[in-house]
Image 1 (cartoon, rainbow, N blue to C red):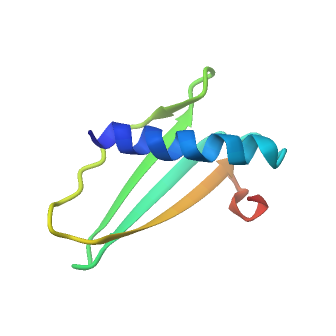
Image 2 (image 1 turned 30 degrees about the horizontal axis):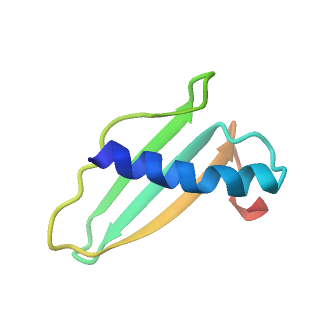
Image 3 (image 1 turned 120 degrees about the vertical axis):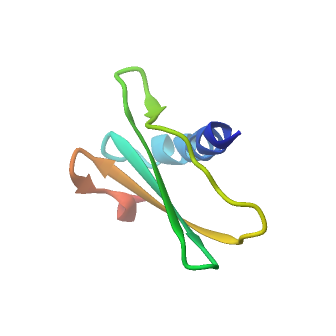
Length: 82
């Protein structure tokens, strides 16, 4: 289920990224900040065939999270281009 969440977010961003004619997105970092002070970080990187999830996302029940998304081209943060 957690990989489905990341894939859903990436799927939602893809048309937005493509229509904006941005630099190539080589990785995406997701940061979930919990209302209990915990932070969960997940990422996806370019596999040559699109973005691939770099692991699982493990969120706890009964915690509200705020999601921050950062887009990269190599080491360059291109989030502000969106």
